[in-house]
Image (cartoon, rainbow, N blue to C red; front, side, top):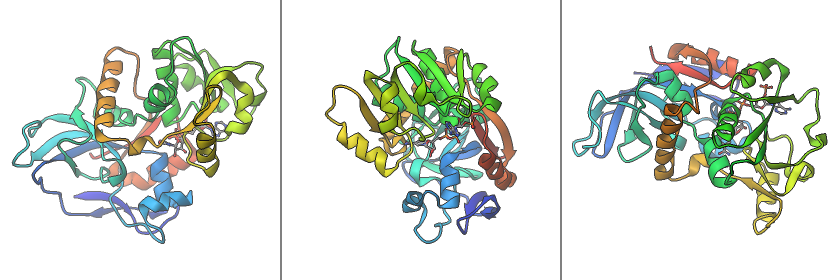
Length: 321
Ligand SMILES: NC(=O)c1ccc[n+]([C@@H]2O[C@H](COP(=O)([O-])OP(=O)(O)OC[C@H]3O[C@@H](n4cnc5c(N)ncnc54)[C@H](OP(=O)(O)O)[C@@H]3O)[C@@H](O)[C@H]2O)c1
């Protein structure tokens, strides 16, 4: 089968499609014929080896040449002898997380892992683009977002941001989105009334206070963002810098303003499986939709990485056609 790997850290040119043995369904596992898998910020980090912390997962001196990809939408190909919850032909979606392996024609996952029935009517490319629940976990669990709150999303046009602005609105809160002028219209198309261009406006000088500052881009920093936080405001940062961990610890017991970092991919399988179901409910209710800027055939994975480096609205997806 075809699979995406890298033999060295570097630019999009290090991305290769190689031949690997098709996985066999062992007890407790399901082999999925992958139809689509997203390519995102973590793929770029694992490919380039930057930030250096990414190498703790992908190999310190050189990549381990693991098959890439952390989410999938596809169809069950075969199941382990003891598996009763899935059958060949079932349409499924799910995440492989830190074990990766989904940017390939087939992937083997635990039957009790992060895999579930794919919602009816959702295409494979849209499903793959919706699997990542980073925005949901940050807003619902870390910040405990409540209806009526004011939320600033810094980095609103990318993969996490386009999900975040939709969730804030779905949960009855008020969103201010920050992104480039080029991608502002795409964010407005998600129902956002107020979109701020970070090149034209210094958001830290806005004359207002937010209950949540969701720093998806990670450029504000808690120390500076405090000035636009309400007295009990929560600052959320996705980028795992030393400062992010330090401010998280320093404000752990705080009742007022506080800073939080979460590593959503490292949560337990049961939590991630529940997120798949919650996402399916939001999609069925018309409150959440996939935002996919482009779909690349698996054989053009390197071109997808080059596109990723130029920036995009929402997600880029590989299709195993
Ligand atoms: N902690 C976790 O568990 C976790 C999970 C998933 C992802 N992440 C991290 O979250 C980050 C975002 O991921 P993503 O997939 O959403 O990335 P992305 O798709 O590349 O989005 C980046 C966003 O930042 C915006 N941006 C660029 N320069 C900016 C600036 N100077 N000020 C404000 N916004 C700016 C971009 O806007 P324009 O394109 O319009 O310029 C875009 O909206 C990545 O660092 C990723 O590694 C962390």
